[in-house]
Amino acid sequence: MKWLIPNNIYWIGGHLFILVIGLFLTVTAGQLGYREILLGIGGSLIASGIAGEILFLYIFLSQESKEKLDLLSVAGLQRVFATRSVSIRDEYHSRLRGAKEIDILGFGLSSFRQDYGDEFGELSSHTHFRILLLDPDFPSTEFSIASIRDREEGNNEGDIKRDVEAFEKLFSARQT
Image (tube, rainbow, N blue to C red; front, side, top):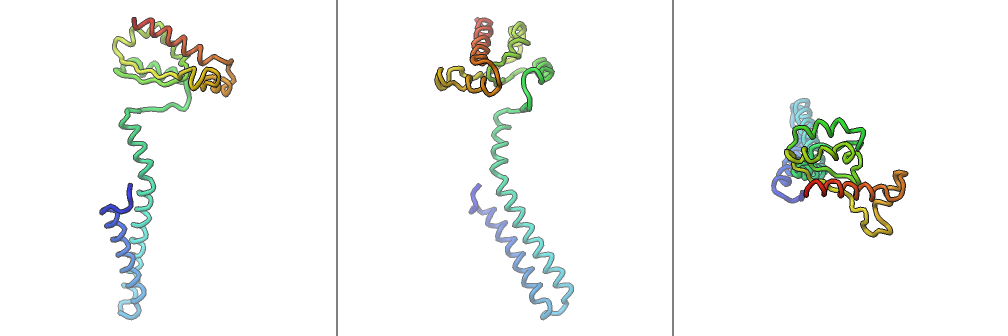
């Protein structure tokens, strides 16, 4: 979002104008008569002008976050789970029953493979799957992200690589 677009200029200018009129009325209230009424109106206009500027800044500063969230929505992301695999098994079951299209992202998806490996042929007859697995040899076989992740999780070296290869073997055999 850019600062100098017409709507922003109108918003900022309008609220600054309200603020200036409010300041003028409060400063000159004693000289113009009707002191209490002018102080009340001036104070209200000052508060409105300040509130309008604060609201503009809030909207302007949160616009980038909104645009990022909109991208996720446009991409079709419906839910992100705080946990994974076994702890969301019930979610897998309920979502796989009536889904027409499912996107799954994972390192090796060993639990998914174990739970649905035998049923995948039937599931894929009524559901379109897109499955994204980690390339176990990226960026190199010597220093792969899969090996780093294995160490982070306290798994044996090569667990993710074996899971990915088992997943590919099982599901590629089902497609032929």
